[in-house]
Image (cartoon, rainbow, N blue to C red; front, side):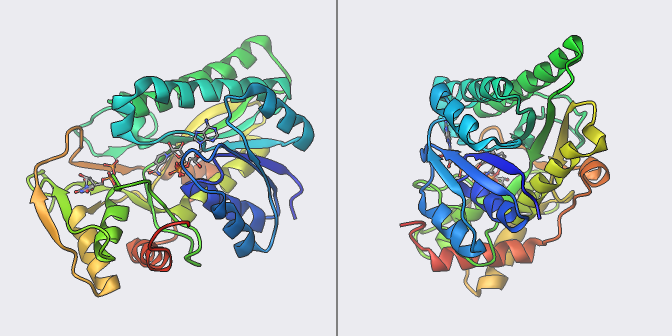
Length: 349
Ligand code: NAD
Ligand code: UDP
């Protein structure tokens, strides 16, 4: 059993709540800090129901330095997993200040509090959106960065800040250096197999999977497939979808790596978390129809601005250094999404 305390920012959200389940199952003490700006505390009640274990929850904004300091004093975490952030690309283009303030300033406050408390192990939710456009669709971690919207740039800025923090330790030769894993997620979908926790988007979903699920259940009339003239096998966009439970297990492996010899002298390293292969929009629709027995009403629409034809991970580094790879397939992702959707047609209420 593990007696470490892990502080999870954004732990009430979609990915954070699934991470809490796996952390509790692995025996960690879990402390969640979330301002509930995009989630409900019901998710945390369900996490505790699934695991039969309890966690500690603070409804606090990570930009509130005093409150965060008090939490660190009281809870003495050894590691932080930092999920808290705003994530809607379109909204980030409309309100860039909100995104930079929440995501970048929030992370600055968090890392200041961590430094003061001498807690220097951090797993950060980054994103494949930090990568620039490429003619080669499979991304390795050394691929040039070049985010194209404020959300992606906020992630890239945070990565820079975290790399600078680690570099500063090297200059001052501190004996407790930063140990940081930057996890670049590809496209998380799916839900816990219990159907008790899952993705509960606000309003009309932007992402493909929740949109398809809401069409299937009759909440939305029709899916627009954004473009069927891409240079891909069926003309529709290809992405690397990853089951959210596989994704969060990558975080537990990252904590273990930070604790072991790989990071003995500190470090700040990026890892792709993806399956290493992609599915097209039409393949997703077909699998959804097979799993649910329902026809998905869709129409072909123009391409969405800023979308790439194809993008998937090279996950070799995560396998080599974090001993992690995906275990679930598209059928599992769709089955679990549908289970969550049918059990919770209105999301968390
Ligand atoms: P989510 O919105 O469901 O969860 C984020 C949580 O952070 C929410 O519970 C929200 O209330 C909380 N939060 C936001 N700002 C906060 C603040 N200032 N203080 C305290 N809490 C705050 O999103 P998610 O899908 O679970 O994503 C988690 C992280 O992973 C985010 O940082 C996101 O950018 C990143 N990410 C997500 C995806 C994806 O497709 N879901 C892909 C790549 C990266
Ligand atoms: N997509 C679509 N219709 C939608 C939402 C998304 O055709 O209503 C397509 C989109 O063009 C992309 C894929 O589905 O090819 C995944 O989109 P999503 O927004 O889920 O992820 P991202 O584009 O951010 O990787």
